[in-house]
Image (cartoon, rainbow, N blue to C red; front, side, top):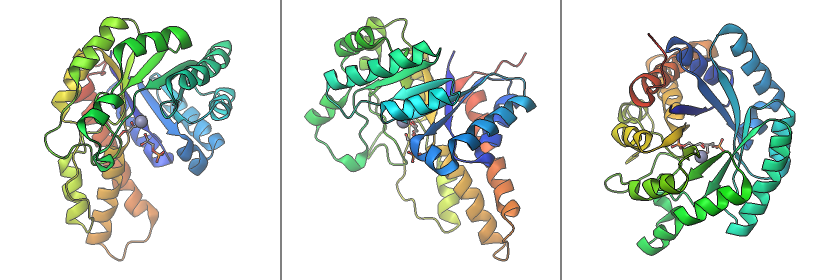
Length: 292
Ligand code: G3H
Ligand code: 13P
Ligand code: ZN
């Protein structure tokens, strides 16, 4: 089964994602980065997810995205998160192993599962040459050693995706050959794809049409996400597409009605467009719907 994991920062985003998942009768992962937690505050996030669970009868997980250190992971585990990610990808292999193992030991003692990361996600802005790019991809042998040494429950890998709205300069290209080798070495470890927004062209166009300036944005085409799911990816992370949906709807409202200043007037279409975007992904891209 392929899970969509959607980044959350506020009430409207949480409502939009959970309503979309409920409409499609799909389980869903809500994930908050440490900067999202700083913005929304952990108690609010937890209570809003609880409120969503009271309203809907679908499985909803609350996950820490890109946990930067042990303390942040511990804080989330102690605050009822279902799972945490420890992102030690900026460290060398041994340091990443040690940090991840520390989080895994604590998390497992509390019944919480851990996603870890090996390899580096590069964006087009990083402008690295081919050799340097190759060095950033996840090494399949190292991946096996990493999972064995840390006991992590799932692994985020680098095969050419990157965060944000500028993922590729020319054609979109992912290293499915590396993914296949990783799956051969780790057949039972769920694999996570970060930086997996499609950067939906219609949403970029809508932002630009109503005063935005996001030229040349490019993401991972839906067909590639489908291929990734067939090749063993279990969790697909999406943030940028939700940011684009929210921004496009707000820009349109303000452009069409410059006199608008009631937040409900622009947050309602923003929430609706995020819901539509998530529902489209669940139904047509991830296929996690349980509808009869
Ligand atoms: O992977 C990063 C996510 O898009 C979260 O970004 O740290 O700006 O909340 P953020
Ligand atoms: P996008 O920037 O492609 O949405 O990726 C989000 C992500 O990986 C969150 O961890
Ligand atoms: Zn990410």
